[in-house]
Length: 342
Ligand code: NAD
Ligand code: UDP
Image (cartoon, rainbow, N blue to C red; front, side, top):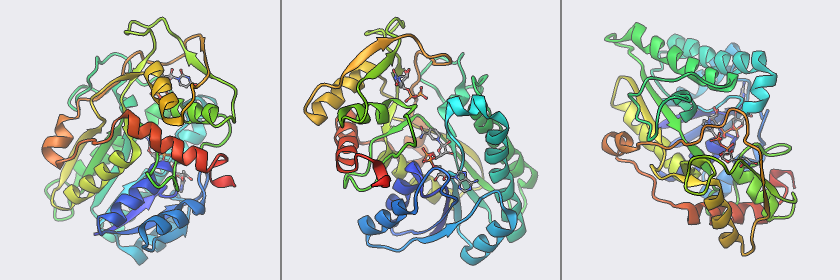
């Protein structure tokens, strides 16, 4: 299968590129390096011993994307490109709506013009909103999002579903696979690729990693007064290579099917903030310093998946646990203390 990964130089895209190449598929990548580096793709090639067709491109640029898609004519597009920082989206909503929605609209226009039918989309558990009770199942109603980033995912899901609906039953009916990720963490076990956030990390695992490697003094745990066993929030942390393998299955599934399908990609197992701090301390060989701080606005107490549908339909389930997650995150962070910037 020929795949095109938009945003493929980013964290999840680069790991998916490895999984796709390892599964014997071809990979092209279109990325504008807004939040990534071509070095990630060089390392993907080093890990797999295979070539990637790499294009510097803004996925919202229609003529550039027509050129790339015409050259590649992929069997499946996996659409990762997007802005993803929740806090930044509150400060820059227009940029978030413009970039995230434009990239999806541009791809749909190009696909229609070229007769391409298959697209897998990076959605998020954030679309379940605040009021659903975990474990989240795909048929729960989508909720009210707490920030513009979440709304862009919510809206992109709707746009993709509507685009499929318009052509349902036709010869060129789309195959749309919406993947709702839970909390992607960890790194490829080689330690050559991993998450490389710019500036101060917003997310828990890169923050813990940077404390462990000495780049930051301590982690602030956002609240220990939640109604959970240790008082800290619980999440479904999924190893990024498990997530990457989920994309391989989703893309393969899309080839033989038409319609819109939604899958949770999670483990089904919740862990607290302190569970992750302790597991990381074990992996890196010294305790990770932390202090308890106030709650973070907008945080939900609990979020984890019911991952049965992906198992039943895609034959996929997460295989790696938090010890492997922390081991691999530490290998990446300790081998690349400044990320790709070194
Ligand atoms: P990332 O920032 O590492 O990767 C996104 C990539 O898209 C980057 O390489 C960036 O340069 C590129 N990009 C952004 N706008 C572009 C544009 N207009 N044209 C071309 N390239 C563009 O993020 P990630 O963690 O790998 O996330 C990938 C996708 O998964 C995103 O859509 C994100 O919203 C979604 N997602 C991520 C998480 C998470 O926790 N990491 C959770 C749920 C969903
Ligand atoms: N968290 C924390 N300190 C940090 C970053 C995150 O205590 O510096 C907590 C956060 O409150 C949440 C969990 O870690 O309970 C996961 O946060 P992250 O931002 O990684 O993911 P999300 O909240 O989007 O699920």
